[in-house]
Length: 256
Image 1 (cartoon, rainbow, N blue to C red):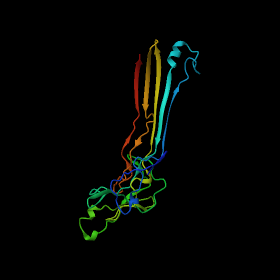
Image 2: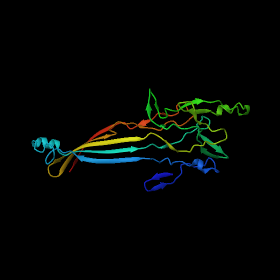
Image 3: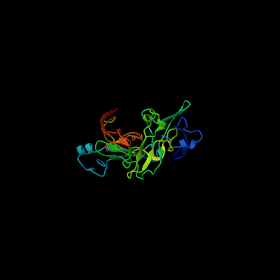
Image 4: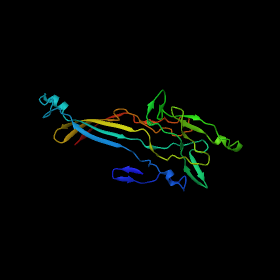
């Protein structure tokens, strides 16, 4: 379910149910769900030149230089996308299958998630999103003495800062108890501020010259990718991608 201003939006991100007898197991948020979306824009004519607050009595040459300037901006803040804790392995990346039907699996939540879970923290050469959680190895079951099965089962667990187990792999032959696109677990938010500065100069009676500078992501704030959600990965919780470098462009045009 995805809540919007006009009411809830219903849809599906899961093609195949993990358990036909427990459909609530796959009840989660849509991948398009964003809890908060804040956007604003505006344009301001700078008060310089004739009939303006500043330099209205300046020499004509100065007035021609300072008049006609405009500043505009677009601001946005969007909360992160919903995430899923997955038990990925090399042999079968977070997928379960029965009789030809395949579906994504999730991890088992066996402890309490920290209240402050999900914050971007930059360290030496690494960006971590779940700094209060870490992974460690747990004993692998014997599997009845079968020599092949242990290599196909990574029994890694996620623990909190006190060493308590919070997340673990589902037992062999079972599905995880957490939802796909789990409510309350979202990726990094995205902050954006674009600005432009323009100057218009009239040439004669029917020509207009415009000089404009655009700054995309003027604050140079990175837009972080989602963290590694695989509880069997040594880099669980690490963010390895980012976009949103500041871009400045200059352009000029003549309307006639």
